[in-house]
Length: 255
Image 1 (cartoon, rainbow, N blue to C red):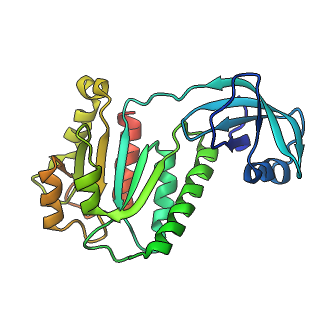
Image 2: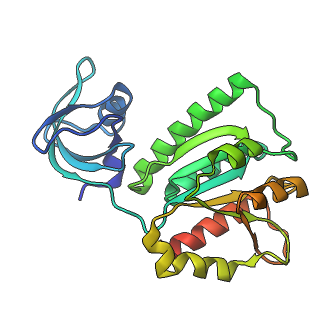
């Protein structure tokens, strides 16, 4: 298999095996100027639909771009768990790191939340810039990790809007909240590992709060939409610690 550092992103669907594909300008620059690949070199392609392909460079130039011949095309690998995650927007651009880790840990959808206790607030222009940056981070992370899933990033969007309008009937929502009466994490994992859960294919939707946690009003709203609280123990975890700890555990124990 080609080295993962020789992995390039293509927005459109692939042609059939044996067909030619023109690499986008940004990816051509990386291929030609950064990696110094030449005619006859092999590389790997991936797209947003989860497909990948092995290819060989037919021609490459700064003016015309890189033309690649597809040798073999691979369909998307199905995961045992379709994972949606909603994370309250943290301070100091920490979201950039969480977006990168979400891609590495095979999150299919990542919703960036604005909650009552959010410190960071964005205007319309700031939201658009942040979303474009997060989408670039996803592509770069996928190149490095070799992930077959390209995380779809949405938001920032209000918590109430996600809970009221974006939760689908088939979603199984869970809210991570420091309430000892919530579902212990070990039981939560066993629920996701059960054969019944994994054969239904229904998405799991996980909600992580801001530094100050969800308000009681937000918790009640989520519960009214079927969300179950999950308790991570007596220790108070930092936002990024809870996010990475939970997703890493699911990657190892459930996927």
